[in-house]
Length: 272
Image 1 (spheres, helix red, strand yellow):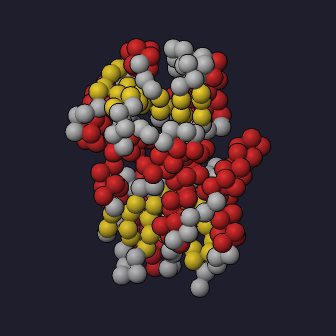
Image 2: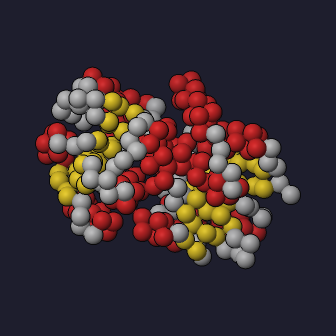
């Protein structure tokens, strides 16, 4: 029987996930489909009920449903529970959904691909304290990094530190960004500022890594500022592909080809 998989979100037409998973399904010779499914905010639970009745194998979940996906699941990984969000759902043989979060291992894999393999005791500045920051804070704290969370509203950064690091991560307002970044070993940008074409000013990079979780037009202005300032700047396509690969492995027990998928994703983004 054909295994059916979806990526659920709103909006969803722009998603690269169907192309990535389609490549891997074809390469592995699997009888499965992977399609986008638009579900508006507040309608995830009935949508998941319909998918369960239809015998769907699993689904990736993106904005605005990651917290709701966790709440709707009957079982969840420790990481998903701690982060408070799920982006990978699997329908269990016994019934009900299992929730996982592949963003955290996806980020670590993406950092490793660009040479950041040892993060223990490294000073990492995370810009932003929204949903995208949660997996980053969780993963880097687990890896032993010394974290500083910088956000426009400091109380949100403080809440993130308290929830995910027990208060171990220091926090600061965006007005202190230059000072915080000056002493960092690497910087992770998770805010959505670039989606409007804005870019944060940065001190000289000295070939330190500036990793932007966004990609394409949403990351272009910020990456240009970083590279001009001497940073070794990377966009979030590597993380997108790596977290998708974690989902694929959860569903099929196969670790797919990241290089081929990253090349495909890059070509699609560049083609617009």
